Image (cartoon, rainbow, N blue to C red; front, side, top):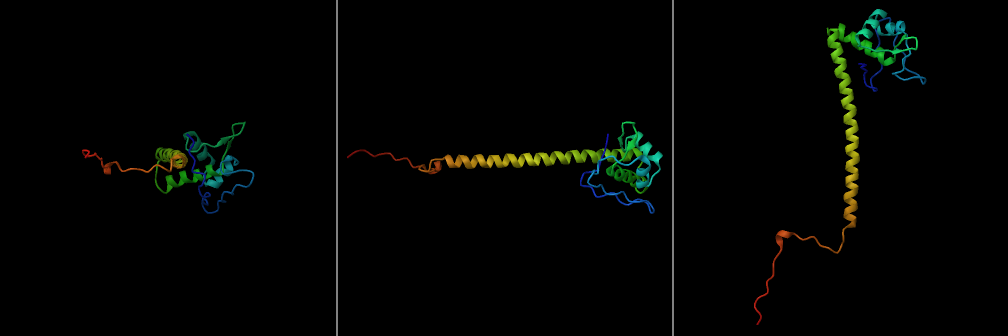
Length: 161
């Protein structure tokens, strides 16, 4: 399962001292475009290339592939690698725990997208309902007067004189 942070994520944080920061994408690609070979991605993430291969085998980070099956990492992949490293080293989370955290993060993103979609559909339905109510009010006859049924008085004529 490929887990990725949301599109609005901040740029990847700087790696360990002496490690160059991941360059920001230019007009030719976005955060999801796989552009970095494994050696560059490993350097940007502050890891050894073998670690990236292991994470790929475990399904923690799934890089893009070239036609020759070579790995290509995106800016988002590098940010994810840094997050895996942070969880492992700073938080003491094992790899299974990291996998679960990434899965749950992915589920949260899917659910947030569904909430956004449903919110938009609700707003559209509400607008349509309000339009129909206004249309119905316009079609009412103006010469009719609403009557409060609880206040009706019944007149009964008395005997004739």
